[in-house]
View 1 (cartoon, helix red, strand yellow):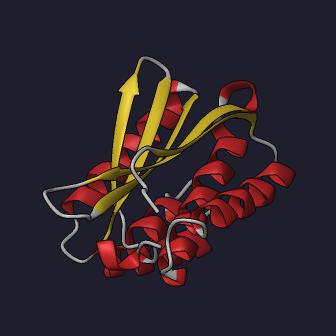
View 2 (tube, helix red, strand yellow; view 1 turned 30 degrees about the vertical axis):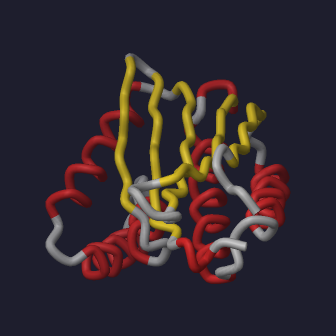
Length: 165
């Protein structure tokens, strides 16, 4: 199957019931082009975590989600990109920037993740745990783009040609 141009784009009201539905939709769609069940699971988890954050922090619960697989390099390898875009408060953008700076600066993402879990257990404050989970358990790179009060979080992972159907 030719996987060039695989793209899922959703604009939705980020409500808790839609998080799981959207996760399953993404999972089922990827099963048509990717044979690696672990990779599909990791991408579905990243989708879930990002949408869960949107339910809490998106202005008017409006969010745009895209899942895209694009060719990478000279071979048949691909990059799978999960992107969530939403408007949010400047306070939340500041928190996101802090989490991303900490993630970028850490030497050991797993240790950072464990430390965040410990901090989260002792505090009700926003922790960035979902982002750290995407980085560690999802084995994905993350970046943050900010335009005014619009935050875009991008998670990427490599899809080897052998993992495609």
